Image 1 (cartoon, one colour):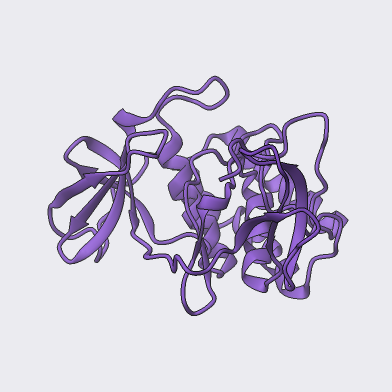
Image 2 (cartoon, helix red, strand yellow):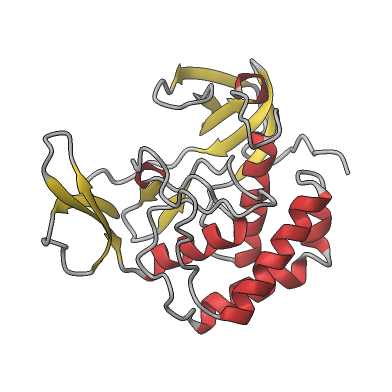
Length: 258
């Protein structure tokens, strides 16, 4: 199947660039389509990577949205392939994050806040020992399950967007769906713990969908090998019934973690 240049309610109208997000590693723009604010990442602005195919990060972002929808958890904001001033690219609804909320945080060692889970200890810029921790909430657990399914290789703290109602969105999903194990995340706080019934039901929904409409949709964005690996990950997660454990023979934390 060929990737679809989508026409959605949000995609109606010409895209106008507002500015460039200079902290992003690939060309990333804030733009508007009518009254809708979006993030636009043109394929032409993707930096080559040694372990991911060139020109396919946008496709993986759209595939991540499709899996998020199949889960029914809205982890990923509405995302599609669209035309912009710099050619075809990923277009995603802009999420205005609540900057007063920190779902992922760094604190002095031994001072993990109530309702948070410890991930690891390290040294800050002043050579002080600190701890990285994240919320222990259903919303963030769902994101961790999503990351395990999609084999997300880049879940940094800044890729978790908090909104006022307690929901958590994830962004920057170009490094997903690799055939080889690549899970790199700061959301390791539940490793080895059992999935809830809701989480297991979500994984089953994705796995079942791969042999139907979801699989046909994803085939426009992912290779056959990517899809086979996705199905195998779902099967493994269901068989083991627990959050993945870090494989310490490879890098399991993205760098930088924020």
